[in-house]
Length: 218
Image (cartoon, rainbow, N blue to C red; front, side, top):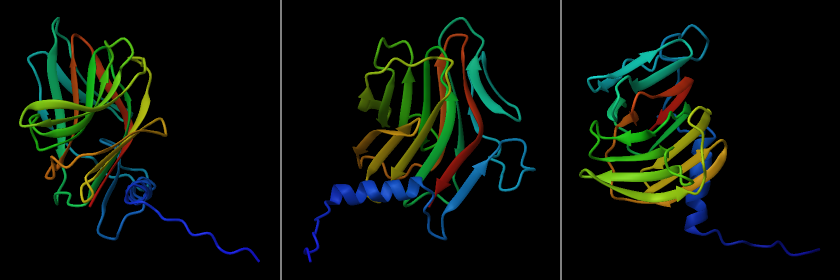
């Protein structure tokens, strides 16, 4: 009879496994969970995401329907527009989000911040880039750093399913695009981000986010 084979699991593997479990909806009884639709909560299991805090430019707009949210501007020059939802109580262990997004013609951001654009972890669709259109960034004290990037040419009008997990306890950021783990980065510079935010920076363009979305935190 063959002897059992033992395997040593590294701390790195443990962290990845934890992230995978959270992504697959493994939460403790204390987790807050939103399978959220902004408007229509009549279907079983849906909850209202609620009205976001908005920061809109002169030509900026945010609108919502039963099918999607739209964020952009109607101007003839680049303008910055963003919205955010505060998570209460503030996350202490992890945050997970899942959005289906058509990024628009220029730059689209989504992730976690402190209610400002000065401190955040976020993914970026950089559509004007020739073949480096998907990035994971952090912003600390107003200074941005790219943590990872993917050499890919993405479409402004295609809907991409984005999942992002911030494992606060272990300082790990994981991002999936269309079900594939794209980024898996360790960073501990930020620990107290309690907002989920969406951002569009463009000229006469918009980003669209299909409903429902998933927001989970603990």
